[in-house]
Image (cartoon, rainbow, N blue to C red; front, top):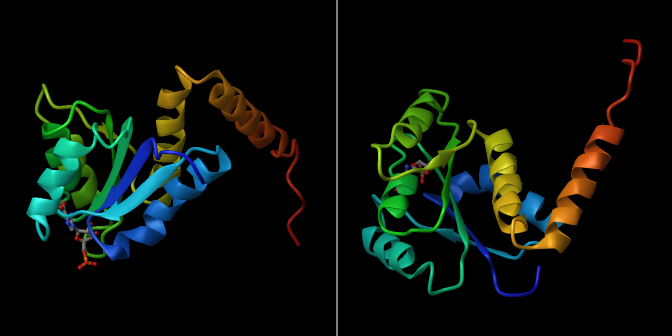
Length: 164
Ligand SMILES: Nc1c(C(=O)O)ncn1[C@@H]1O[C@H](COP(=O)(O)O)[C@@H](O)[C@H]1O
């Protein structure tokens, strides 16, 4: 997707990309430019601070942050930017993503993270949510969002195909 990226997709590790790719695919479908980066509160704290403090100046309007386990990334980014931050709990092996979910969703009042569902569905919905936020001031994108939803509705059969 060309154009200045309006959405930043950040993730704590390369291992999160198969999940976070669902957000990227949704934004591709909706023709929304994004930039995907690996940023970790734990392993690359300086990169985290530089990203979060500079995100607005870079032209981003929404941040999607995915992390697993002790998922401090979304909350730490939210602490350092006024941009809306959408958190995606990546499914962890040890605790199936319950740890990721709880560490992202339980923010103290004053620093919000819009938390999505665990795993790929959450990542896809984060892409949709980011697009919906941008669509408030972008009528062409709003039309593309409506068309995508209509196509999704159209694709649902009224009756199930008999099991073989
Ligand atoms: N939760 C975080 C953060 C963070 O919150 O900053 N940085 C990495 N991680 C997570 O560690 C998990 C395991 O990472 P590795 O697969 O690299 O060992 C990943 O799901 C990542 O998001």
